[in-house]
Image 1 (cartoon, one colour):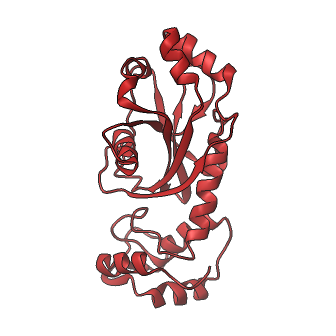
Image 2: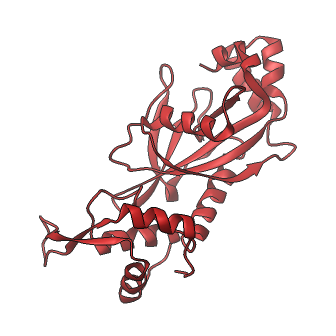
Length: 251
């Protein structure tokens, strides 16, 4: 895939790339979608070059759709990474040798690239990790157990998580990460997992209720050992309105 892309490099913006941090929530774990590289034991974030005929945001949407099979993903640009030495010569040489890339294409690939970071929030159960080519591995990995990543991808991941935590104070989170019906404890565990700390149950309920984005359903969660909790869903219209106007409370 990379060899074919470089063969058509005139179709891509020189020196510019995209890297995406795709978050999903499952089994009380905040998962990150990662790719096992073919040319080393390291892993990588999904990403790619920017086509000349696509806006940058659209290029990110293309990457996300290609890796999850989903459309309409919550997507946010969060930072630009342009350190002089973010592109390492030893890494580039390893990739060029593995794919047997011609010297002129290798020179283009080895030039300095500035990458734009995006984070996405997706429904873990709806996303189907997609591979490119043979022998590629794409897996969901707990954000607390991320293996060694290539280049500055750990810095990009850490910045995405830092941004998401900060933006919990500015916007609601959950619509893109939870199933259609959920309980308040499940929503609280999502927030706690992202924040990396426990929240007071009564205080959380008071704050999340005050936002006005929840609809209490006339249903209870089934197959539970103790008293069945009520199920909720998000009021999508209200949720979108709060996303635009923002929150003024902290967690």
